[in-house]
Image (tube, rainbow, N blue to C red; front, side):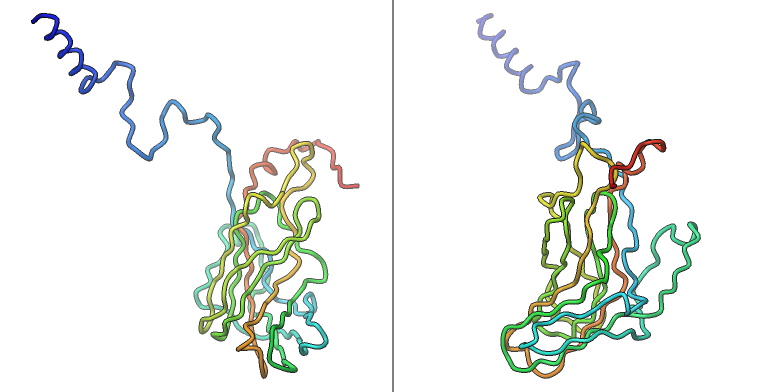
Length: 238
């Protein structure tokens, strides 16, 4: 009888007892003793990539047999746009009263594509997490894509979203981890370079004239690596 009682008491201790070294951890929360282990340090910052104030910095591209595309600077701005945090404190006073308009005249109905490209790739430093841009899509089933090059200069293309909405809308795309943005041997540069915004059309909507407008491209990027660089380090980009 004593043996059975002892076993029963041990079983209860295992089920309901709390060892002195155990920690009260809520499911889904990090274990206190594990904080700092294998945790990536980050310094996330929203930065302005392009405000589309100068249409001369952009050019339109479209296959000659599909139609004609042209860009134009127009006055306007999304009402829902908020200023970049700390931009005023840093003394940045760039004008922000224009948008980039893209006009496309289709030659015939069918599958088509066109894009706007900067004259020079736009570099975004750090490990870029997201890229966003304000767009007027005019409620067409066309698909907007982000064109970029990775750390090694390889061309990449990411789908941002469908332009089936009215008025201004902020579209955001996450940069997947398989896009290389840094190399641990070197510290002189990291991030991506944005090379264009491409639109692939829905064949049923590829006719007549199409208008689309862009404004205020931003990125959320991790600047931890840049903030920890030695001020006397050498640059390898020569």
